[in-house]
Image (cartoon, rainbow, N blue to C red):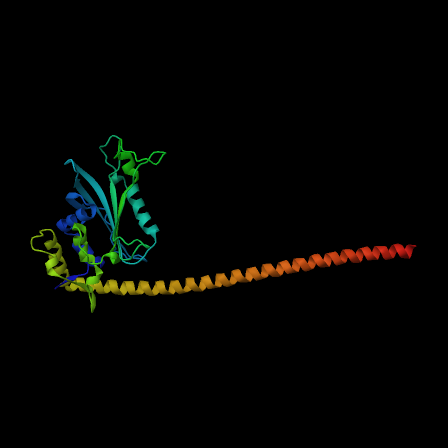
Length: 306
């Protein structure tokens, strides 16, 4: 068994993806395509300044080799979130890409945008979906829900839509059935050391020497595990997230109290409405009695007149 740094930590993951060969290996496995070249886009967004909920962001420009041998430049937007967070944050970041004029192919006659793939590495499950990796691809249909194939792919459509890949890290259960499973095994939290979540215990046999692409990943995570600076940064992340969890607990408590108060208020409103109904009914009965009294008074006056 060997001990490597846990790449679920932002500082380790960033260190891992800074290596061009490793980034190409991981992204190729995720996209299931041959990536020839990959580079970090100049408008990189990372967690240099922590947000209320951590989302690590980094963008890549990747040159992909298609089945016909043609090369195509695509954008890969990678976001990693350790804690559950609202989808609005992910949507806001997507908006940055759609608005960025640098993502438009300037020399194209129709000024189409570069195709984009959004990759989400999540440290939490998404509902009841059991599959660890979910591929979401857009498709064109006609009125009768029949897929449109002629003229597809289309640069105009691809400029306004994007595919997504969602990785649920807690759903990784140590089973290696394909190339992607093998690459993602370095994120499998079932290998976490019992006494320290900063490290994973891996079986070196899973990273065979013959696998030229996996060896650099293993070697880099081994170096990260031995780095004093990396360990200090992971400690900082632990402290930060402990504060976040504590604040979330307080917020959850306040929301729970508010929900109980709203429930009690709603019950009181129902009771008040019932009392208002009873009062209205009493007023109606009183009005009827007043009418009867007025009628009796009129009859009495008539008799007095007689």
